[in-house]
Image (cartoon, rainbow, N blue to C red; front, side):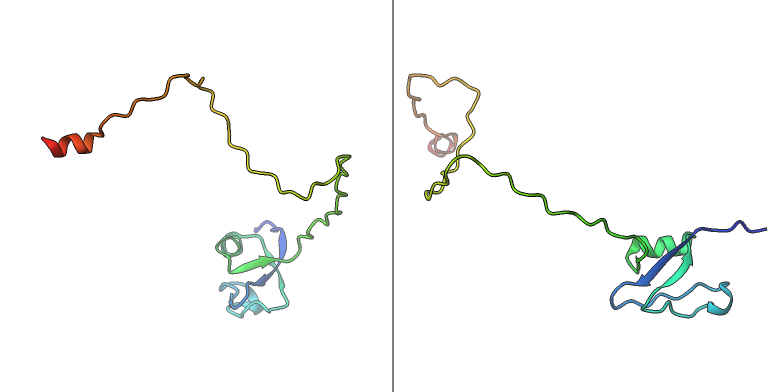
Length: 110
């Protein structure tokens, strides 16, 4: 005896045609209508969902309320801020670095 599977509402993705698999009674091998249909949550239909051929339509999207932006007490400046560079953790030495010949130029002289 078959256990009763949960169902879900799905519709074909845009420009796709998805058919019921064989063994689905009167709907066997018929395309799922563009308006959607209730189908069992079995391997066939979950695979179609994962690959993008079907889209679930029974999941309501949670509505977000727009959150008010916090008002800053500082007056806005008309000048744009310059991008700040990250500070390095190494201490700077007071002596300037001496330049040396690059390894490419020394190889060319040999």
